[in-house]
Amino acid sequence: MPAPYTLLGADGQPFTSAAPGTFGGYRRRRIYGRLDCPSARRALARGHYVDHRVFFADEATAVAAGYRPCGVCLPDAYARWRADRAPTHHTPAELATVLDLATGLCPRFGGGIAVGHGRDPASAAAADAVAQAWDDRGGLVLAVVDWPEAAASWLRQARRLTAHSPDAWVVAGAPAGFAQLARRLRAEPGWDPARTVAFASLQDPRLPALAGVDTLRGLRGADPDGAVWHVRGRAVVSGGQPRSHAT
Image 1 (cartoon, rainbow, N blue to C red):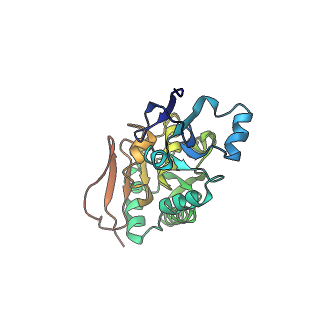
Image 2: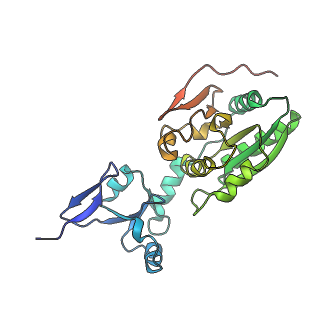
Image 3: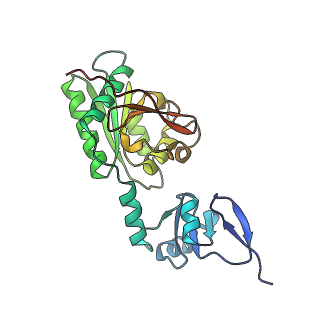
């Protein structure tokens, strides 16, 4: 009788299987790929991955468990994954609400903010727009920091965002990358999700779970119509009509 194998199910929990897995995964970065992936093999040969190596019966199970495709051995699936999650460009109403929310978090008019963004063009454009508008309002932009979608550590970005004790933070990016940064930000003195404002690219129902329960409690943002949403517990909740913006 074949020896039992330990696989992960669609719920992300391990179970015993009589058949081996057909896809492997790296738990820490929630990546899955082929068993012959050259990148994974190199990492395993150096002694990495071993303690965080997981296996799936098939690709659909890996996706259901919240793992994303490897860019090395599954380039087509990875390209589709990136395209599906690429933030759309912000709208004027969205930008106006983001600015209003950030202004409301500052104890004085023209307070200091830190702006963070993913490295995709849409997120970078949103960050540039809010930084320019804040300058136009007479405010102080203390830092503009970008982050990758995957990294061994987000320590440098987290410390740059919190270094000057801003009154508020404004962020734009894809949920997966920001969720990982947020977990590191939570450990930095001074950062408060309730003083952080996000663009619509982060209005994703998966965000609280990706970041961890209570990591983003109080985070607020704007949707493309200018309405406000916020994180409450495990949910991203839409609340309120589009704000009335002064001209």
